[in-house]
Image (cartoon, rainbow, N blue to C red; front, side, top):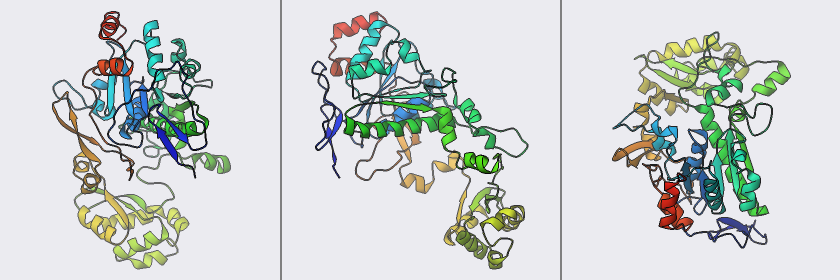
Length: 434
């Protein structure tokens, strides 16, 4: 199999025997820059999204080593700078999570000069990430037809509520509505009760993950064709994509999957059970072999051969009674004893941790999933989530906790990357372009 060979001078990748994209002769040469680590070293991303879905995609690419340049409009900071529930010296910390590994520049895309500067940046980029309402880039005369003419190898990652096409494309979209309209929220909660939301913007995060996945696929495809393309990701579709067999179950059997509380209907045993101190643990032993181990750990080996529980279908039919048996046994033991006993027996079990326990979890700490970010705004280390997935040969890293100020990297990007003079930068700032 032919191995891709990185071409850092142009930010593209070539395959032996395949002619990859060569920028037009008139295009300025790609500026050399040094990155520390990660599979996407040498890839440059321009992010013009706000809030969560687009910036989360940019964060994932940055975690993998990409050079991510975030654009904010002058005087209009990304609202995510003020999001999060903890506050220190006026600062909040969702920004620390989603702005890490990024540079910040300011640019007014609504003005002709700003548009031209963006095209200059696009010539130097591999990927542009945006999550505006469909048609916004086109209104600024920055649609993919324009961008690809400037840089045929450019990949445009677009995240929106409903996608770039279809009857609902122009509707604004938030994660809460996407989770609801996709059917995902209907399955949450308890039967007969109102469908609650998870206390995070799950739809945004799912869309950001799919958007980053699409960007990686498009980067690979560019090594074959030499051309970029549009990655179109919708929040509603991202929420739909994780719903397992709900669609074929309805199509074939008319089954409308609904909420099932703390368990999955027909999957038993897989539920939460209260321990002797009142705390809850998850016990998941719905596979036949694992259920037999659970029966042995409970001192009830005969249950594994009982016709009411002998296989997956039988246990599903008798789920309530089985939960009562396991619940009565669990209530006699401490949560630590339960988890230790079941884990030793090869039964899947674990506590329901709060974040206070998560940040000290030995497994997560050992895997570097709880890591410090030096946050300039707070002048201290702030803990945040680590890098996932773990790559053995080119691991990602948290190189910084995100720019403290808007336009913090204006000089670096505009002067060093695009070659603008200090006088031009001063004039652009005075004109409200930067």
